[in-house]
Structures are given as structure tokens and as C-alpha cells.
Image 1 (tube, one colour):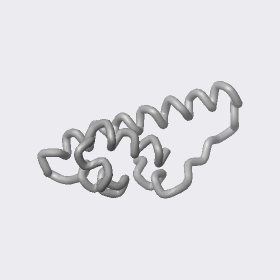
Image 2 (cartoon, helix red, strand yellow):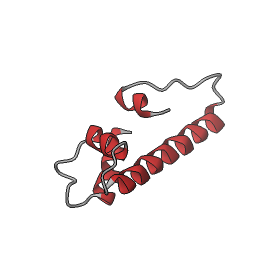
Image 3 (cartoon, helix red, strand yellow):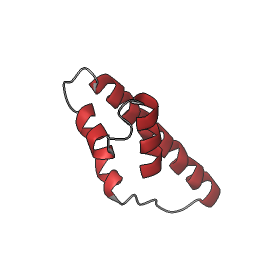
Amino acid sequence: SGNGILALIRHYFPEKAKKMTTKDLFKLAKSKNKEAILAKRAVEDWHFFIAVGICNLFHVFDPEKIILSGGLSEQVD
């Protein structure tokens, strides 16, 4: 998912993509900055793609539970 969020950063912020980190994106999304709208959209897209991926895994493997871990999992409400 880290690579996925970096792809979204490159899509929404092509001029800042080389300098912006995933932490920067989530921080910007929570700010009142004028770019916060784009950052929120990128985060929403990331949430959507994660949800679709989890749903697909659920339908293929039918697990009892799915556990999210790692640094990006802290960004999910």
C-alpha cells in the first residue's frame, strides 16, 4: 500500500512527487492548506482501493478475519 499511496502522490501532486512522503500527504490532508482538498481526495482514493482489495481477498479466500498492520494502517479510521 505504500507504493500505491506514492502513485497517488505522483498523480495528484506531480510537481511535488519527488519530495512528498506519505506522512506529508496525510499531514496535508488534515491541514487547512489550499492543497488539503487534493490531499483529502488522494487519501479517499487510497481508502477506496484498500477496501476493494480487502473485499476481493475476502471473496477469494473467505477468511475469518483480516488484520491490517504496518505504518499506513495507523492512518485508517
